[in-house]
Image (cartoon, rainbow, N blue to C red; front, top):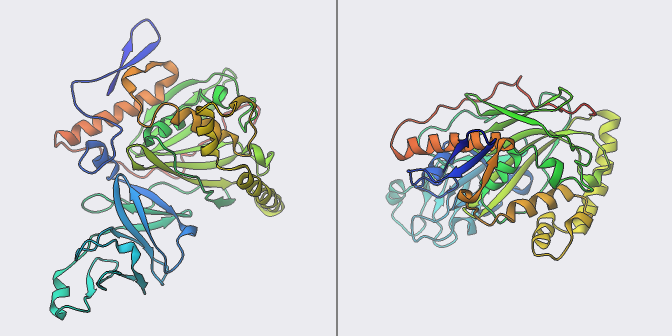
Length: 397
């Protein structure tokens, strides 16, 4: 997929290029999947993986076993035991190793087989299971699923201001990851999708969008008529770092916060959001936020999943403009993203100048995926400098 400017019309239109590359596919062996596997990707919330726990996970259309050893180290390994293909996550965590439930084969964090109770002791040295580099940062567990040496970690800088960092849970969303990532690239939708009753209410002025591709990702600029410029950052393969208002249900508590949004693909038609929420409050202000946040979380739980209510809106079961929810912005976004279809057909779109950032990202993806498809080197991506940060960009804020 690529894009074409239509001269004199201010309109840009998607069209199918001569290549057979699909920029949104995530599976192993696809150009898109190979691109995604060049980066560290978040796979789980740290707080959800206690010591001694093993879990099945599906990332980019592949199944894996994830466990936390008794030392506290998290580790990802192949889903199937190399013996008779039993699921590894069903086994037992022993120190920092995982023992298969089927016949007791035991593997350490490096993939070495330590024990095979019913076999000749020499046999274990010949057997390994693939493990994947696994790290933790800002409350999330990351893994690297590519070939060769993993890139530098952490994949992007931490917030520079003092405050409180949390990782709110978000349910999986039944649509392709790129639809959500492109939503995060789209600054204009805020004035319409979030116009009624949401945390972004009152942000109605139209920005002029421009972008800058860098050696670490992309900077998006949204210039308002006032002269204010909102700066948002986008890190490959699917992370957006931006300043946003608090959820509607928080009634302003904690003020505008810095968030990192990750849209990790489960498969081509499902994704899992991972959120790093940095509330820039300390002392008494932080205490006030934490108290308000406990009330907010209880209300959000009682209200039901924002994603589920978004699906209800798509089915016509609720009128979204008259609906109230503590996480209304997520209800609205879910309805917009999933409403495009589980795997949207971008050849049917008519893009305009407000889509500048989306167009630029698609061009970058096609460039990189074409290089992968043709066996050529791809761009070398670096970690962003710590002093390049997002900002408010709104005069009233």
